[in-house]
Length: 550
Ligand code: SF4
Ligand code: SF4
Image (tube, rainbow, N blue to C red; front, side, top):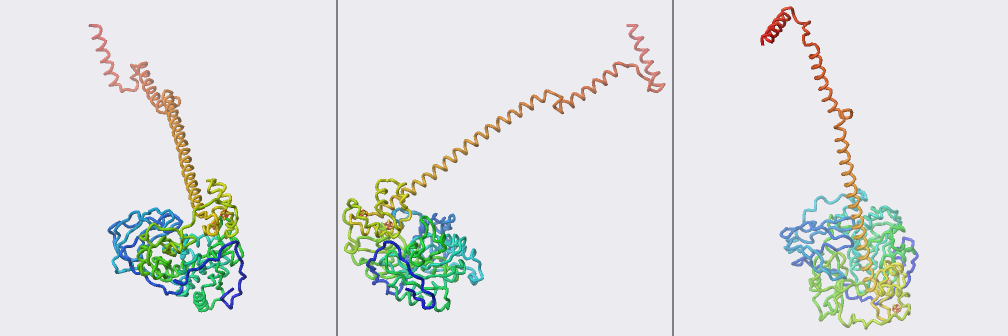
């Protein structure tokens, strides 16, 4: 079904598997956005995205202003981090952060001053229509924007690679991936114009043939708001499409399949088939960066679950502890069994509510025991193939489980483990209650560790080989030097080959000849004057006389 009466309705396709799940969105989708305010302390992990952690630029004691860059992108796949409010850096140290590993990571801790004082943003960029794509992409990079759906892939990397392909279709993803989560729904309801302006910026960068904005059938209010914003542009290039409420319609590959019927190749990217997909939140962040020169400082978070008194969507500064958002929502209703970042299917449990909101925090789910009962004990696989029936990535989950369980990493890769989007559909239907996704995550981590180890040992081997080569070169050079020296010494004894020796020999020869000449003609006085000759003869006569006397 299409919501744009002017644009031709693209036929919808379907993807394999998937599940129709209870939405549990009614508590949050109709409540207006609230602001979390400025917390006393902001915790900003240097790793909030896919790729390398950012490089810290501040030290404890530094006063920082809102919007100031605190950490720089390190390498191509990375993103800078900016101060969400003004204050003082009080520490740079490892802190727990929301990650499935539960590990701590280096973080910048800011004690806020409540003044929310902006760094002078300098000149607001000129009209983006007058800027070229490379400059806009660089500005997006400097603004620290990453995919806000939940992936956290640095946006400039996605845009940069898309510039090398012709993009036929730009897909703007407003379809929430999981139950409970409504942050994109509320964003579309309240800030549709910003999203559409962001879409126009992306259009200027990518020059796609057309753009499809996708949302789900249950998002009636968001659909109306987005349609009104599209109408304001008067542009038929944009079409709004509602897709069925079937989990995981909001997954990138599944959404592309629904909208175009095309399959993103295994281990490939949508750009390989001429498609670029961006989340609505990311698109609004691009608008803020390009039009208002504002880096990514905040995001909308759905705070929900039976454990929270007033569930809702909260706009929170990046770095705000989860506990502050729970307080903004009236606090805990009672004992909470599990606190998750993300939804019930793809989310993960966090160690405590002191962990901060990061760029990829789309949902905080405080679930009670009744809401998310503990799964029964795991039993043996009965090969019922229910998992295969629901897998939206068209994989064989039981085979993946078998090879993951037995530690056969190569076989798991052969069964396309890395095409698994960890949607949890297989585990949801498994009658043996096997936590399949946990097995897959563990196996992926093992494969990454093996690859890392292999890369490290390859590097060590190459270094060792280079060292041996260097030593051999030094040995050969030394041998050659010694040989040259020996040849030089030999040559020095031979005047025929040594010019210096030849010159000395010539000088000696001249002296010898001169001496010989004077010895042969001792009385040669022909060239003297008559007077000189008489004096010499007189001297000779005296000497002769003296000799005879003696
Ligand atoms: S659903 Fe569970 S029991 Fe059935 S084949 Fe898959 S892993 Fe085995
Ligand atoms: S978690 Fe992976 S294997 Fe299981 S259904 Fe989802 S994509 Fe398929």
